[in-house]
Image (tube, rainbow, N blue to C red; front, side):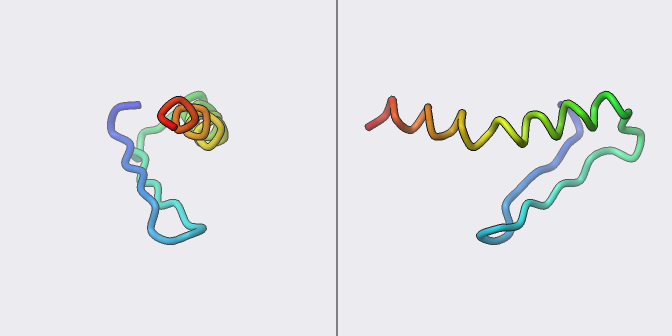
Length: 49
């Protein structure tokens, strides 16, 4: 998603800075990606072990 800044700023905090013109559809996509990320990262790390 172009124009989106996301970074961790603590053990349980995610900072997000979406563009001010983000649409509801883009918000839904953003939330789905954030939901999927931990499982995808875990699967990726398993292939590296």
